[in-house]
Picture 1 (cartoon, rainbow, N blue to C red):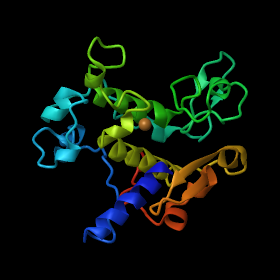
Picture 2 (cartoon, rainbow, N blue to C red):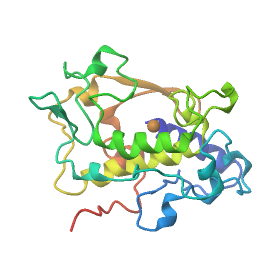
Picture 3 (tube, rainbow, N blue to C red):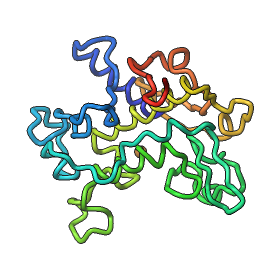
Length: 241
Ligand SMILES: [Cu+2]
């Protein structure tokens, strides 16, 4: 939702400056087979000629254009989750599901917190765990909130309120949205539309490109073509034959 409104706001300015009328936010597919896909895209690196995309509050190796990922935060095992909604097994170990526990599942610890936060927890869905959270942490770099450095030097991507200050946030999140589209179009997966709660229980407020308030619910973003006027160029699933 916030990607859609951000895209519309930027598109309006792109057109005002004489740019393409079909401009769209790009996505960063760091899980592609090309090893270069795991490097920070060049436009965001220190050597970029686009000043606004260079951010010092980011992992220095990412900014230098060298490998910066530890472990495999780009893994897309989330695409193998058979169900969208997670559940808890009898040992109280989470069965993640692609999207996580239903927001009103009483076993979801987040129900006791602010449901609009997406802090990590037992209700964390597979795609939120990886690549979402893993890439946030990797791009943040060594200066997390607890690092003994001045506040101005702390990373952006590892902090909920600062992450959108890093332009890479937007292309990272576009890819997370794309992965949902990959998941739902492959493997016989479906969104759990029989349960209306996750689609309608919560609404969020945005500003459209003219500054007018718009309220949206999850059911408003289930079909990118019909509801949001875009589609991805590639929603192939590497795990599907
Ligand atoms: Cu995020």
